[in-house]
Image 1 (cartoon, rainbow, N blue to C red):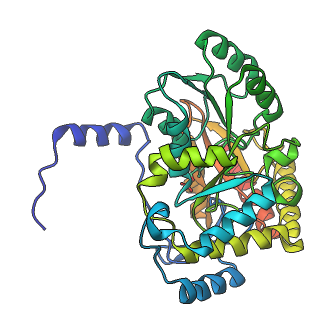
Image 2 (cartoon, rainbow, N blue to C red):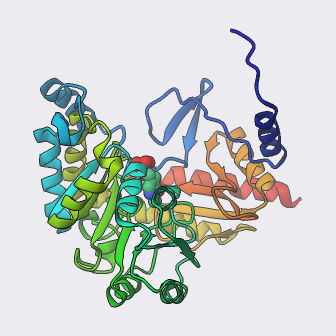
Length: 394
Ligand SMILES: *Cc1c(COP(=O)(O)O)cnc(C)c1O
């Protein structure tokens, strides 16, 4: 290979990240996504994926994808608006509408793109964006992609949101995660929906971590708070987490979907998701709605309860959460990395999440649970953390 001439500013930026214990890199997993992961020829018990229901490696879904590839081919070949929108896409959209009680659904290849699309299409110079401080990066980047005024309110603080609305003076777009991805806690959605309705703002809820695993029929955080499509005009969800597949959607009314179809550039200028993916997501949705899905949600909830009960004995606090995301707040990035490394030495993969993904001094061990874990798996994680904290305190 030729010797690349790396610019000094790049090397300096990398050095800074290393010194702050914030350097990040990708690791290769030599196994399908599951509670057991192989890395560097070693098998680990994993508590770091977002495959909350354990569907990513489900035999039925793997078969569905193989069959669907035979039927529909492997690529969609074009954007939705040109000729890449196949009957597999339409069928998935239809079933999502019926499940969630919305008039229309638009599909996206990733949740990141769905958020870029909806926020950047709705906001402009006359319509500001207001978001929770801890919203997912893709919502924030959607605001940046628009030329709107962009403000953030204090986390889960409806009063702070109301104050910002009053000072902005014009109606705009209010956006919140349903479950916060690095914290696991839930947004006060009913209160946010009321505020948005009173002030004539458009509410966008990103339920990437709630859909499939929470609420009646797995319908997510909206179901937990009995919210209708009228109260939440834009619901965004992803298929790469509880659904175990890939992609995302935005659910809204007919007119709003027409509007996004004209003005949401990340919807228009990209190739449609592979039709076999759409068909597999639909099979995953059917599983989520079936008794097997309910069973998996119950197992997951039992794991959450067990972990939180055992965590009471640890020298660090679990963050408030009843979702599959159960972060243990450590504070220092160095210590969080140390605990994660100690777990890895003992055969467990669980990642430290550090700034800038989370605010300064709030590095944490992000424990994620899956219905595919056994009770013994969760107990083993707790026993191992008991031992690590015992060693440290001596
Ligand atoms: C993961 C996630 C996304 C992005 O979804 P992808 O399909 O992974 O691109 C968006 N919002 C939230 C809250 C997420 O956790």
